[in-house]
Length: 490
Ligand SMILES: Cc1cc2nc3c(=O)[nH]c(=O)nc-3n(C[C@H](O)[C@H](O)[C@H](O)COP(=O)(O)OP(=O)(O)OC[C@H]3O[C@@H](n4cnc5c(N)ncnc54)[C@H](O)[C@@H]3O)c2cc1C
Ligand SMILES: NC(=O)c1ccc[n+]([C@@H]2O[C@H](COP(=O)([O-])OP(=O)(O)OC[C@H]3O[C@@H](n4cnc5c(N)ncnc54)[C@H](O)[C@@H]3O)[C@@H](O)[C@H]2O)c1
Image: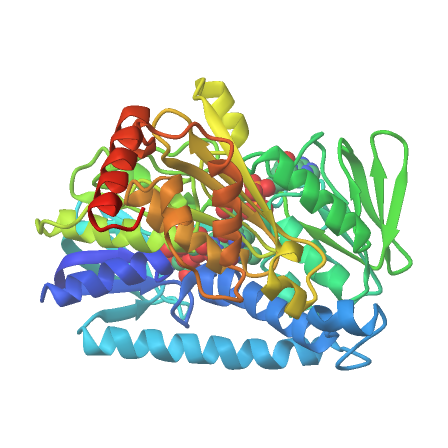
C-alpha cells in the first residue's frame, strides 16, 4: 500500500496549487480525481470554458466594434455551436497540457478514480472499471469543489433543459434561451448569449440580484443589459418547468409564462462531498454539502484533514481557491508561508464585465464609516473615445477620516483587469492622494482612476499638512521681497 505526505482529492485550482506547493517542498504527494482529465470544474465546465466562450462570442459577433459600425455589424454572419466549441477545445487541451507538465516537473503523482475515506488516514479509490486501491497519508486535502444544484422538479433532459455543466455541450445554438437564476453563472451566460442576438429571458425569484455588488453599479449594469436585449424578470418565482413540442415553457408564480427553445438552470451549486464518506473520519457538512474549516489554516475539525476551494463555500472562486490550496499545503506540511491579503477582487465576466474590490457604498453605510465618492465614466476618457465606449464607469470609495481607498467598483470593458490597481492600492494602504500624485499612461482606461480620484479629492477636506499656513506664507513673501531688494530687482 502506498503512503504519502499529502493526498489531495480533486485537481481543480485548490488541489492543483496544494499539490504543486507540496512538490516544491519535495514531499510525496498524490492527486486523485474522478475525471480522467485533470483540471476540475474550473478547466472543464466552469471558469476556463465560460471565459473562452465569452471571448469567442465577442470576437465572432463583432460586439466590441458595433458602436462604430452599427448594431447589425458582424464578423461572422451565422455563428454555429461548432464555431463556439472549436476554440473551447483548443483552450482546454492547452490548459490540461500545462497542468500535466507542471505536475510532472514537481513530481506530483496522479490517480484517476472516485476517492472515499475508509479510515482517518486511509482512502479507497474506485476506478471506472470497478477496481479499488487503498492509499494512506499523513495529511489530506479535500478539494472536491461543487456540483450543480439539480432540484427534482426541474425536468433536466440533457438536450434543451440543462444545468451549467451541460450547457457548453449544446448541439445547436438556440434562437431563444431562458436562464433561471440571476447569480454569477446565470448573468454571465445570459449576457453572453444576448450578445449573439439570441432572445434571452433571465428569471430571478428575488427582487434584486448580485447583492454583493454596489447598488449604483448594478443599476448601471441592469440598464445596459436591458438595452442589449436581455429580458430581466426580477421577483419572479417559478411554479413549474415543462417541455412542449421541443419548446420549454416556464410558468411563473405570478401567472405569466415564458417559452424558449432552451433553458439553463443556474440556481447555485452544492459541495461535492456526498460520496466522500466523511462519517468515517467524523466530519459533517452543512445543508449545501460544504465542509467547515479554520479560515487561516484551512484545517477541518480533524487536524490532519484540510479542505479548500469551493467545498468550503464563500467566496467560491478559482482565484481564491488557488491561494487557499497553497496555504493549506504549507500548513499541513509545517512550512511557514505568507498569509493571504485581506482584499481580493471579484470578477464577473458578463457583457459588460463587472469587477469589484473592497467595500460597497451600502457596506460603508451599514458600518457607519464616513466616506467620499469619486466617479469616472469611460466615455469621458480618451481611450474610451478611441474604443468607441458608450458605457462603463469606475466608482471609488474613500474614507473621509483616513483618506484611504476602501473600495472600487467597475462596470465596463476591461473591468476585471483594471481592478488590480485598486487591489494593490488597498492592500498597500494607499489613499486618494495616490491617484492625484501619480501619472497614468495616456490614453488608457486606467486613467479613469485618476479622474475618479480627482473627482473625490476636489470634494474632500485638504489635510493640515498640505495647507500652507497664513503666517508662513506672509513670512515667505517678506523674505522674497527682501532678497529681491538686496539684488536690486525691486
Ligand atoms: C460556469 C462557471 C464559471 C466560473 N467562472 C469563474 C471565473 O470566471 N473566475 C473564478 O475565479 N471562478 C469562476 N468559477 C468558479 C471556479 O470554477 C471554482 O471556484 C473553482 O473551480 C473551484 O475550484 P476547486 O479547487 O474547489 O475544485 P473544482 O474546480 O470544483 O474541482 C474539483 C474536482 O474534484 C473532483 N472530485 C469531486 N469529488 C471527488 C471524489 N470523491 N474523488 C475524486 N475526485 C473528486 C471533481 O471531479 C473535480 O475535478 C466558475 C464556476 C462555474 C461553474
Ligand atoms: N466570474 C466568477 O467569478 C464566477 C462565475 C461563475 C460562477 N462563479 C461561482 O460559482 C458559484 C455558483 O454560481 P451560481 O450563479 O450558480 O450561484 P449563485 O448562488 O451565485 O446564484 C444563484 C441564483 O439563483 C437564484 N435561485 C436560487 N434558487 C432558485 C430557484 N429554485 N429557482 C430560481 N432561482 C433560484 C438565487 O437567488 C441566486 O440569484 C458562485 O458561488 C460563484 O462564485 C464565479
